[in-house]
Image (tube, rainbow, N blue to C red):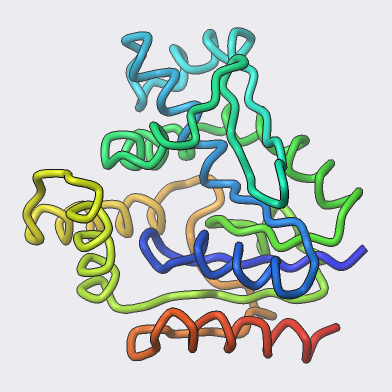
Length: 220
């Protein structure tokens, strides 16, 4: 099996670019961030403090997260309910950043991620795929862009969905999440030594996808 690990900060376009690259290569795309977002959504729904390891640890036995691939599209199920849309809200994003810092949550989702990689040619994206989840991946990419560029893209996406947001607030969220992800004690966000750095700040979406496909093909 060929495994591709794509890491990078929030809003770098990992999901969109990885999904498109996987489609072009005939691979399965695995959005690990969706798994953490699902746990975050469960916590928000049930009044659980997303920063409390103790509360989250107690809740884990009641959480079942599944990735279901329908016609090549990934759907995320939380206890049998499709939450693919709900997990994309700003609240879910911040909750994901909190719960991903909890060791028990990472262990809880680790086996699911590894199992998918063992059974499929896949592109898996997240924060620590190349360093922790798939350390032996054939290809490792660190996909990034400037905070301002990532915030602008996210702002545009939210406005198109009808959300009432301010660019400044989105930028603050991006910077806060960058800090949290890179400073957490467990599996902090950082490129692995083998990672190819791909900065898409000045690239269009199509150019970004083409760059990632090119890098992967060079490693196959």
